[in-house]
Length: 378
Image 1 (tube, rainbow, N blue to C red):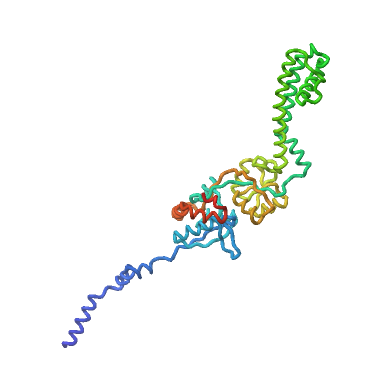
Image 2: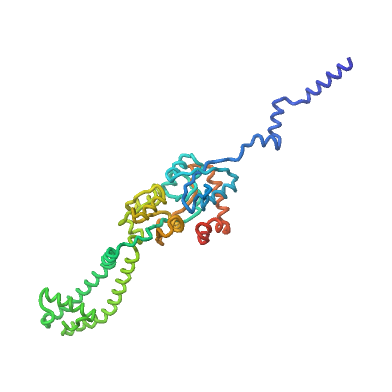
């Protein structure tokens, strides 16, 4: 009896002290350590669209991506604790994937344009550049074409017509002063105008001088002024013509953006270069990639290829070494950034991490130096 009472009392005490099952489970989840580990999700993993555009995104022999944009993204993701997987696209596919949200971000040499900004979001820019023009290394025209282009260039024609106009003006003035008093040298009528033109020309060049000479005081005064003025004018004219001919003979078919209206110009389809040239009423031939366009340039299918200037310089030193030239000037200044779907929750965090990285000058040297030179880190 006494044993039964003891057992009953012990069971009652145990029942009173034991928590209900639901409360026990809740206590385990809320407990520090084990409960948090069970409830917390694993590291966030996102898909990142990439477009090969050396030196910003390139692929090595093992298939790994690297480059200015790729290395920067990798470091930013590391700082954020973000796990990601690269998915390769062409330009059209990358822009569509970012816009639709199929990828969390787009990484490449992506120009920030009004059209793109209206369809997606961009990070803070990490690089400033512009559009460049590539021409074939041997885009020199045949000698006959070069000579004709030089002689009939607008600048040379301007010099020639200006000189003829000045000779005619001075000759007419002298003829008007001389033809009544000196009809033997300056005949009446239209023939006399020819005499005046001839006189002004031989006076300027000092060749054949004496065929016609003014006799009136006014005529001789004009002649004296013309003699001294001719020395300076002839020197200036000769220098201008020589400079123009030199520029024309060395410049090839394309020297700057103004020449693109006159030649066959290639661009990457749906690129900022295509937008800029079409807006400027330049006829373009679109290609699927920069490599395809540059092969067409080397093959003579087009006369110029317009693309982001640092990419053209990269191709000039690597895949197209000795085959293309990149003109020194660039136009349409551009900013590069990472692309995100509209309203992305990653954009703010990426901006903060990227700005922290980019404010370190040594980091910028490590990032840009191997691909674009130390000067790009400034």
